[in-house]
Image (cartoon, rainbow, N blue to C red; front, top):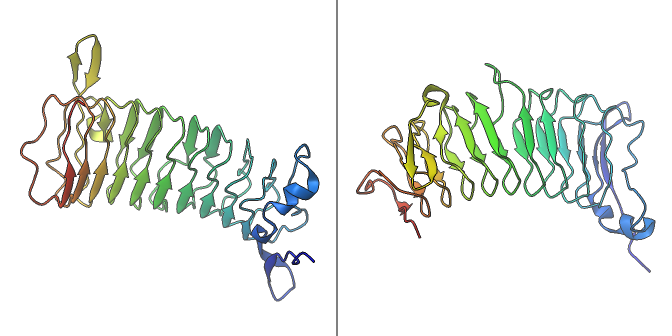
Amino acid sequence: MAEPTVTTGTCTRAGRLVAVDLTPVGPRLRWAAGDTTRLSPPIAGLDALEELDCTGLDLDDLDVRLLGRLRVLRCADNRLRELDLVASPSLQVLDCARNQLMVLDLRNNPSLREVTCVDNGLGLLVLADPHPGDRLEVLDVSHNQLMVLDLGDRPRLRVARVAHNALARAWLGARPLRELDLSRNDLDRVSSPARRRSSACTSGATAFAACELPAPAALRELRFHGNYVAELDLRGAISLEVLDAHRNQPRRWPCPPSPRWSSSTWPTTA
């Protein structure tokens, strides 16, 4: 006899569900429904939900427009092609990794602290405008198809991972940033809002903009290997410990590497 599948939930004193974990269902739901059936979780009427975990269910649709109190949403490892979060202004944690999302609009989610949207087909990411109460601390949108990213000046952003995209432009201004990964992109310019007018240099028939990163003093890890960066300025990175900058187009680099960098991979054209 097959073991019973048990979902877990947390109720308020009034008996209303505020947290639901559907992950124990796993792939059994898809197996029972068949591959051609469009799946969506049974959450109608659960308008008091604050936390929802429907990871790994092979869902085709996820409608959370009636979940106005939602704070945590984990919906990784599904088949989602769209995700409407306009009605969830209190959302703090979002994990929608490994879906089929092409657009992620987070303009109406100013309370977000952590966003994970790894391994989708994401071509457009729209964040809420930076504001003094901005809470975003971790952003991971690696392995997508983003071409442009403007993070603005976010007062709490510590980690930004944007590796394996198609970035040609990235603007960064987060003062407390400690970890930045821009590896495997098409970058010819990395700049903060203060230095968006970086001068360009030319190599053969291809134009490359200078990489000027007046890095935040808190930055400890910087990775941007596998790009087309020609110049680099790290004079402001007084706390930098890890640098990975190989496989670029070095024209002028600080040399020799700083002894304070405990781990560094220096640029080559190979």
